[in-house]
Length: 244
Ligand SMILES: [Zn+2]
Image (cartoon, rainbow, N blue to C red; front, side, top):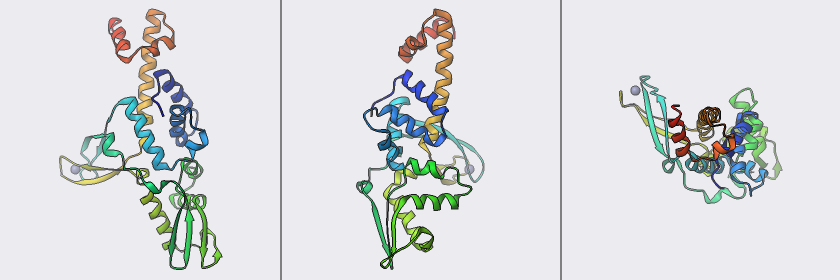
């Protein structure tokens, strides 16, 4: 994987806008990993995908992530700042290869969910049907004693154990921020989705950069490519000269 230039990031942003939101991570990682096949990126576990997205985010906008949240107890608006290093879960050695679970008379082999699975369940009506469809995609074989059984024949405690083991094997996929409220000292955990966080930053960046291109192109007659090839510092310098 390598960092993206301004022109590449802008191309990626445009490409991502035309597809469903759940494939934006793939568009970004495929652009940054030209030597890796699209299939290989698409079938990374969600946690491994998100770990790579964090790295790409760090290369693109730096190691600090900042946003705002509302306290779930008193509603106070608070700003939070985290470093990418704080959000990176150590790599799990069992990520390669399939997983299996033995519980009472049941034996289940399964794999971790990937981006294609998430895209497949994105249109589900509710969380329950999404969860069931995800299990159908990821369970490779389920047996009760010597009989092969379907997902629907698995008891709830077996499916719960499979879901729990999936989460434990790929903790980067389910990242939570520890937040505390300065007003009422309430502490809670908030889900953090690097895909949507990074995408909204790219979206804001693209709007700003295109405005800068417009200003410099209108003033100097430079081509878009030449303006994007300028370092951000030089671009800002020229923008300062034209009073933008
Ligand atoms: Zn509070």
